[in-house]
Structures are given as C-alpha cells and as structure tokens.
Length: 177
Image (cartoon, rainbow, N blue to C red; front, side, top):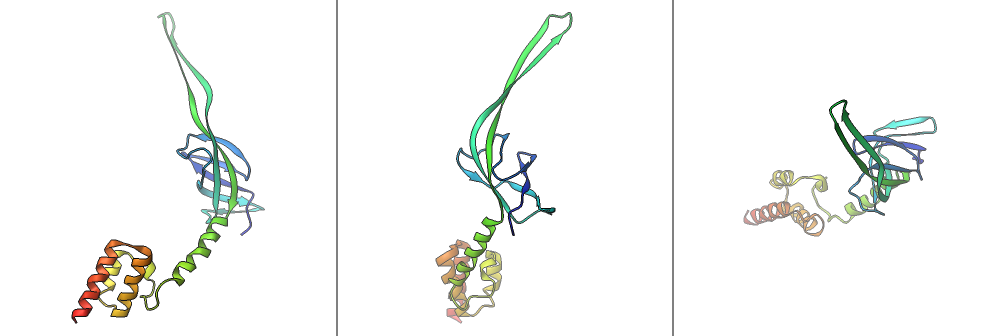
C-alpha cells in the first residue's frame, strides 16, 4: 500500500486533518519532547480514494510543549462597582507528523512468522493464540508430547505462570497414568 496524502487523526477529543511534515498545536500530551507516538487514525485519504478505519499508522513526534496566547476575561455589573479580571494561557504541545502509511504494520507482520518458526515441533495447533483458560481445557485431551512441547514453548517464550502450572500438572497427571 502506497503512502496516502492525508489522514484524519484524533487527539484529545479533537480531530485534525494532517499531512506528512506538517506541524500543529494540540492540547498538552503526556509524551515527552522528542519522543514519537501513534495517534488514533480515523480516515486515510488521497489520490481520489479514502479508507475508513484503516490498518495503516500515523507516526508523530512531539517537538515541544508551549503556552498558548493569553486569553483575558473581564466581568462587570453596571452601576454596582463590580469588576473582575481573569485570564489564562492554554498548555499546548507542538507535534510534527513524520509519516503516514503502513510501514509499521508491514514490519510487525514480517517479525511475527519468525516467532512461530521457533516454536517446538508437536505443539497443539494454534497454541500461541490460546488463553490460559483454553490451555487448561485443552490440556486434558492433549497427549504427552504435545504437553511437553507446549511447556517448552511457555518456558522459552510466553512465560505465563498460569499456563506453565497447568501444563506441569497435566504432564504429572499423564505420568501417573
């Protein structure tokens, strides 16, 4: 997928139409200066077409935290001598849009198959996506080599304590049989 010309992002309850290289002021962000972040992307468009809820990402960098213009507020009541003056300066963050596109997703998809290739042989099908509760239910029907392969995978990669204890107890139960 080629990079698009613009995107509509959501930050702080407001929506902004942005392009690559553009700088804009937004409500103060918790992200530190110089750090990058991915705002929520609502729409991706350009080249005569658009995409709602796209799978692409927008990368933005916080350039700095600044104060907005001073806003003065005055109140008075005629013929009463009541006068009050107040004011404030909004705290803002200046951000720069670094990239619009699917580069981050493509890199994540390339890294994902490598993790599955490292899985031991003989593991139950689709084991990586199972929750601990599903592992608990499924371990009752798996044979011993499947249990040992799943236990090896948990100890090497996932390290979920609940899954490890379930698999260890299932292997112990198979030893007794």
